Image (cartoon, rainbow, N blue to C red):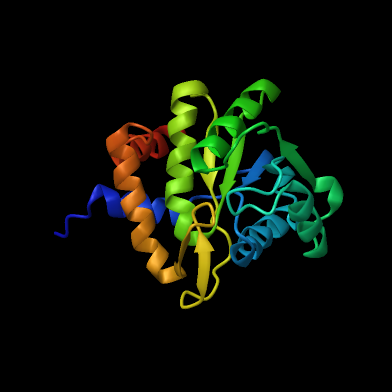
Amino acid sequence: MIDVSESTELLLRILADVRPVGVVERAYLFGQTQPNQESVFAAGRELAEQGRVQKLLISDCAPKSGYLGAVATRRAMIASGIPAGMIEEVPMEPTEILHTLIESQETVRFARAQGYRRLIVVSSPFHQERAFMTMVTVALREYPALKLYSIPGAPQRWDEVVTHSQGKLRGTRAELIAEEQKRIEKYTAQGDLAPRQMVLDYLRRRD
């Protein structure tokens, strides 16, 4: 019998999570560099068109750390076919930089303040595992009643060279997979990220 590792199970469950029943209060679209933003826009557009969420959340930040800023992001989302009324901003200013942990912390706190019970997490496929793990880590610490669901952004060409990670990292999307794994290991060792086992346990008991 093949022994499937917990890391493999977690990755597959994050990339192919069950769709929540009914209408979810919000979906958070992680901030992306310009080459990767259409991935999350496509997922957000589908959620909106199918009536699966009440609204789509984005960071309210000004341009920084590779993120184009709320104004430009909102404009691009509308141009991509997402209704303006579906877009809502999560307060994250003032902050000198913007990264996955800051986005997760402020989104979970916003969800707790608003009394949301469920939230969909959306990021580019190569970033989805770390993004979801980070959001779960924060929720377990600050709002454990929140149910998080993973819906990756639409696939894009894996051989395209793009920028990522606050606009500092450059490589093909395929190369960024290994870089993301390094960050997961690093941030787990630092205590900023819950171990994979804990995130997997969260998913096993969520529903």
